[in-house]
Amino acid sequence: MVTRLTAAGHGAHPPTSLERSVVRCDRAIRGRTDPATDPPFDSRPPLTRPTPCEAVPDSPYRHLSHAYGRNHFTLDRPFQAILRSHLGTVPDLARLGEFAGKDLYEVADYVDKFGHPEHIMWSVDGERVDRAWMAPSEMRALEWLLKEGGVNRGPYRRGDWFEHFASLYLIADPGIGCILTVTNQTAYAIHKYGDASAQELLPSLIGEEDPIRYGATWFTEIQGGSDLGANRVHADLREGRWTIDGDTKYFASNAGLAHLALVTARVGPDGRGAKGLGLFLVPEHDREGRRNFLVRRLKKKSGTVGVPTGEVEFHGAHALLLGDVEQGIYYTLENLMVSRLANSMAALGIARKAYLEAYYYTQTRTAFGRRLIEHPLVRRDLLDLEIAIEGALALAFLAVEGFQKSWRETPPYGPGYHYARLLTHITKNVTADMSAYVTKTAMELHGGLGFLREFPIERWHREALITPIWEGPSNIQALDLLEVIAKKRADRVLLEEIERIGAGIRTGPATFALARARIEGALNTLASYSEGEAQFFGKDVLNDLGHAIAVVALLRASNSLPSPRLGRVATLYARKYLEGTRYDLPTTEEIDEVIGIDRAPAVDPVA
Image 1 (cartoon, one colour):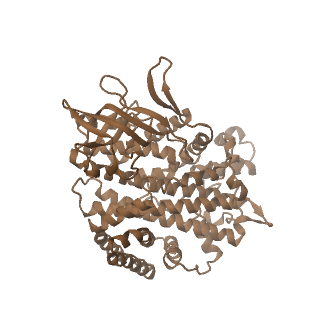
Image 2 (tube, helix red, strand yellow):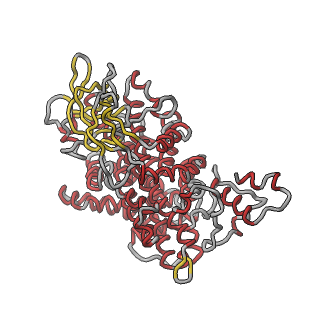
Image 3 (cartoon, one colour):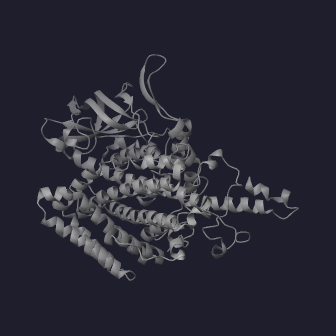
């Protein structure tokens, strides 16, 4: 539409200022510029005088959101820089960034307000169907993400986890992200541990084959929650076929949507705790076409509305054993690494969306005669938020790198796998805490508007609050961290990796030395504790390590690109989270360099 505006039919007169604004805004949204008409980067207005995009014809939703209608990939230059520091190139995610910033952004908010899944228990013919009635727009968005976006395809066709997790960051919405993640976890388990018949299901789970199938991971039960050793759902081998009985899988994501589910079930006598669990693939229907499990109800939740969450029970369900029956708990914990990294990406993506809403809102809202972004207190808030996001982002993709290197390992795992586990527990906790903090502050920057459900910033804070709970709350992450250090000695690999990174640090050596000292100090202090003391202070160790490793990750990215901006972010992050002291007062230009993520130095696509 914008192209037609300045096409030959309108060529009799020079483009008006309005037409130029529309074209410029349209290109900005799509991540394109035209040297002939767009001003060079250095001559564009400062942050206090943004170019308005109100003239772009679009959905009425644009009146509710400042982040809507923008390409969330092309504007996020710190994100591109982190990716390039790991990959040597920047994946082409512009198409997904446009979808995430427009169609998906509106669909997710609409579903939260008006499109909640509904449980259809009985058909008009009196058949038990137990299906979730989903908003058609959400189902179309999911189909686009799986087929056109290829979100779940990369790990199995290219062995690439970076683009998968980067995509979840851009998607951000935890409901839609959860549907994609549990489907991917199902594909992951089939890919690694399924027999030939199970492998035939893989293409439909990753968007390569119609009809699309959705997966699920039903591990926890009402009596135990994160304590899988308390599970009671059990599996029995009868006449050469595994059957599953019991209730209740209590927080069953994708209940009523899933065509296949990963299910933990107790095998053999009770009393073996978590080591007595096998991992099974349970289809929605058995070989005779009968329902294989029942959905008791869907739950009402504060957020994550896009994913139907219910209670599931089994009555002689036919199941396919995955891998070795004695290794079920290890397969399950390995599978949880995928979802914990996905949870980290959701937390980061939610925080980024909230930041975008606040960042652009403060450029248009005036108070006391000035735009909000011109007030020092507001600029300090934005600086704090961006530093927190980028530190967690660098930490998270360091964890993705660890997983990328070790994901093909099987039990018994090697040191690389346990190191990836260590980083995953730390990352899951740091990103979740960061997301709750960022979204709360972004709400505050909107004032009373931030508390109104009609605007998306309120939802982003609600969505952020699930991320500390999903996939094991902070206490579970701390306990698992202690276990992987005490029993698997993952701390040794961590220290070796820190030394390896340190050898490449040329800019910011003092900041690196501080971070390394904090890591060594946290581990030495942990080694001096009794078991009870270690558990009491476990979350302190988790956070101390997380913030110090985040500084190391930022410095590594800064030196490898190189990126002086990321180096300054690392210094500011260390000052706040390692030293606990005030920043040296930055200049206006230094603050703009950090908070203006869409104006940060451009990132070359390739090294």
